Length: 342
Image 1 (spheres, rainbow, N blue to C red):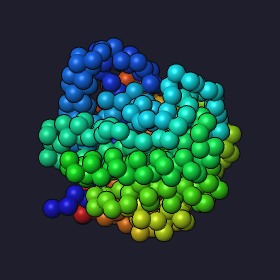
Image 2: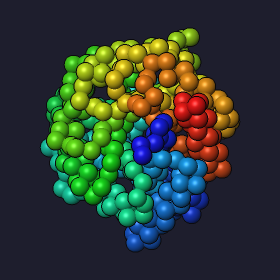
Image 3: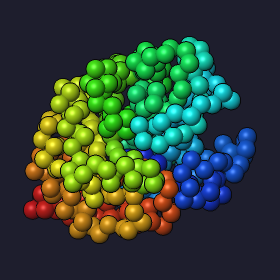
Image 4: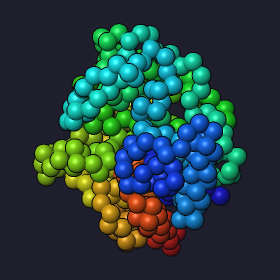
C-alpha cells in the first residue's frame, strides 16, 4: 500500500567524526585511497541506518561520499582545472575561490553510480539521489572557455542526463537536482534554466525532483535572508514555469522561513517536498511544529502529493541534532497521517 505523506531529507546528513571534521561544511576527508572508499561506505551504512531508525520513508546516501554538493561532481569531469582558481561571487552573495573551465567539459566516467549501486544493495526502500543542477554548477565555477552561462549550462545538462540514466539503471527511484541558483537568477531561470533542467531529465522513467532552497545555515546565507524583508516571494518568480515543466516534484523551504505558504498554489498538481525542518538552527522541532507546517501546506497541496522533508541538507549540524530532527519529521508526519485517515 502506498504510504501517505512519505518522509525524506533534502540531501546531506552529518558525517561521522572518523571520516571528516564534524559540524564543518565541506570539511576535508580524514582518510585516503582505499581507506577512504571503505570509510565512505561505512558512513553511508550508518547514515542509512539513522534514517531507517527515525522512520524516514525515502532514504538517501546522506551525501557521505561527497565533500561538496557541486564540486565533487565537477571534479570527475574533464575541461575543468582545479589548480587554476578564480574568485567569483556565488549565488550573487558571497565570494569563493572556484575552479576554472578551460576547455570543453565532458564526463569520462560515471561519478556516483557505484555509490548508488552500493546504497541500493543495502535497502529495499525507495531511494533518492541528489545531483547538482546545471545552473548551480555554472554558478560555482569561473568559465574561461564557453564565455556564456547558458552554453555551459546546456553542456552540463547533457552530462547530468548521462549520469542520471545510469543512476536510474542501478535502481534509484527519485533523482533530485539541487538548484539554489533558481532562487536568485530569475530571468535566467525562466529564459533557459528550466529548459536545461528538462534536458537533464530527458528520457528518464524514474521520478525527478528539483530542490530550491535558501541555503545551508551558514553566515552568508543567514545574512542574505535578513535582507529579504518580511515576505520571501522568490518562489513566485519561478513556480509558474516549473508548474508547466516535466519535473515531477519540487522540494522547497517552508518551516521558520518567511515564504508565504499560499505560493504553493502556483505549483498545484506537482508533488511537493515541503521543508518542515529548519536546518539553520540546532533547536530540534517538536512533532507538533512539524505537523503544523504540514497542515498549512495541505491547504495548497493535495495529501497524496505532499512529501514531508527538510528545508535543506543537514551536514553542518551535529549527528545528535540531525537525529532529533529526523525523529521529529517522522513523528510530525505521523500525527497528520492519523488526522487524515480519521
